[in-house]
Image (cartoon, rainbow, N blue to C red):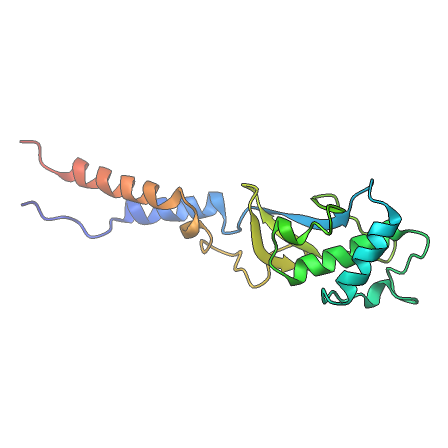
Length: 173
């Protein structure tokens, strides 16, 4: 049986090359839970009262004097409360419904001094469990190759490269 080389420098440089082109960040985009445009004010007001009460949303920003206080727009008020509830609970479509008066959007609803914190959604469309006020996933290492090894396509490439090196180094009989 032929002696195999452990891990050739060629393999090492291939891995470095993959890391350089791909990066370690997880592809995601920001999303918010907002009130639907066609929702009636009375339904929105009722949903806001529940979200800020029993729902546990932090509604301080939409109270008088808060940066998101807008007594002229139940839509804006509801959107802030819905989004806060959405972020504090499992980030899933069922937590952005409010009697079919809310929807998930990728359009930032922030206005003036009122900044809506975002949640992250993975690019394949599934919702992730992470939320962030800066738009990136909190606590995630985006430097180096950390994220690359968690991608579905990474390991098949490594295995194929390894098998190719075994086949190409085997003596022809």
